[in-house]
Image 1: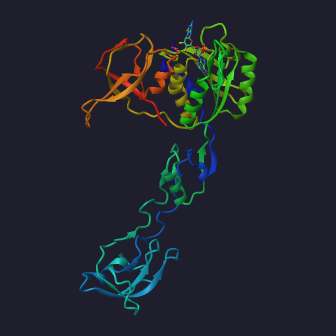
Image 2: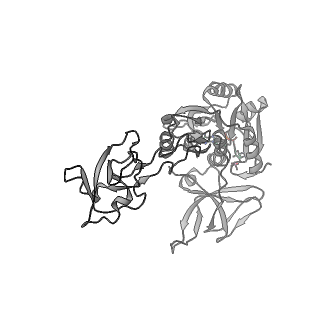
Image 3: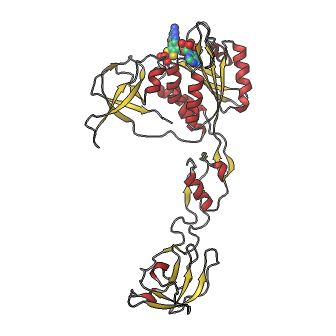
Length: 414
Ligand SMILES: Nc1nc2c(c(=O)[nH]1)N[C@H]1C(S)=C(S)[C@@H](COP(=O)(O)OP(=O)(O)OC[C@H]3O[C@@H](n4cnc5c(N)ncnc54)[C@H](O)[C@@H]3O)O[C@H]1N2
Ligand code: MOO
């Protein structure tokens, strides 16, 4: 049997990031950058006022207060959007200036209009009642971003704030990775659609819903094809039909040791999909390979519902990151204390379903404890739905006692 790490490294070694493409800013939203973006100009591009008020020379307003205001002649009018003034402030003069307007030469601070009489005398002068500090209310050229600076690196997820920054430095097009398109197919003669009445012996298809929505939560664009009966030709035809819109295909079921393992039998014959056992529980029978003219990656996950989900978390999620040109996160593993004792099979890494509980005393330094959300059976969907983490028990550990430290993987809740 392969270890989890060995299987994951085989998968990652076969995946190439999707080719980047140029997108307009709004359409780049939610994608990952495929380039380092350099600013071509300073931000702010020029010294400008942070306040509506008066641009002054400090020497002219030093010591001004309510009783002894400085009286200056207002010689310039500077709304936002005007070209930077070339007229140097003469001694004893100031410029009326609006927020965002370029600071005129010679001015070394801005007096907010609230510190003045706003030119109430009506004779072209203004009374300043309070002196600003050197540079006060001036936003310096380049203080935010310098020309030539890399403002966002490849791999950055473009949310609203990053899109805003790109617009701010004047970019309209950026190179991003496309959203991976994932096709999800369930196999099994026993499956029927939710909403229909199963005949005796039949069950509702849940895996294609779990996997489709898990892929969506992981940032993919998803096409759920639903169920395919246990017939090789139909399975192959279905996959081939879907390849046109797939960057990744996921099937569930039909990969273990039974008499009707359609996925294993059909895709195994192609030679490009490898079926293997991984030392984990759930999720032991795994298949991965490529299919079709574009060598589209395909995961054939085991059919048990918890096995399919855990396999997605452990193998498909990293693959989706790789397709988007992202490295695997090297987060510190998170630990919790087992609130109860449980056993684990020898030689297989177990992924138990857990629920986190805070220490009853609470408080900042309380240790997170974890209880079991269900038994270890890979059919227990109820427990999986109520879990908020997976408890990872290493291969060599066969028993965890209450109070032992265990590794956990938090599960996303949307
Ligand atoms: N003799 C052996 N039997 C089994 C072994 C083994 O090593 N030797 N492995 C077991 C393990 S572990 C797993 S996991 C499963 C994997 O089985 P398959 O991938 O072949 O899946 P199926 O047999 O088609 O289904 C297994 C189970 O899951 C249910 N299922 C399947 N698809 C769906 C779906 N879309 N929605 C809901 N439930 C689904 C199916 O009805 C079966 O109950 O094999 C073990 N057997
Ligand atoms: O691998 Mo199976 O997933 O142990 O149930």
